[in-house]
Length: 145
Image (cartoon, rainbow, N blue to C red):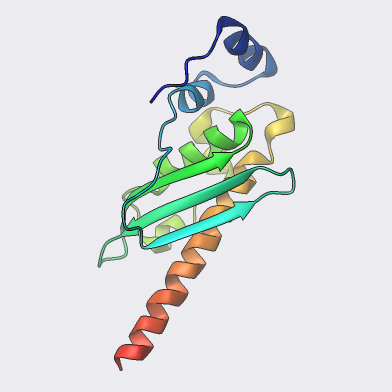
């Protein structure tokens, strides 16, 4: 579902330094939503007040098959979380743990300088979700033995 940007909103985003890719991810709400019966759902609030809720569905081989997010915050947070989802889909949990803020910035083609904290928000949400997933998986192994 696309969020229709007005000409003024689009102009402001461009003038502020948002890349074409960041604007596209934000306006088209790419990866925004909920995964049905997620293996993990994790919420993280950043120091700026923006919030990301991350939903991951992981298969038996520890590969992220589905991922979505919801957010309350700015276009930078939305674009960063969307780019992070693009990077995490199809990766193993081990590979997903290696995704960095720089990877997100590269995926976006950059962000305005005041928004460089947004990739950190997305990465922190991802890392919290992965830690929770691994703890839950270890606990299930322990319970089975």
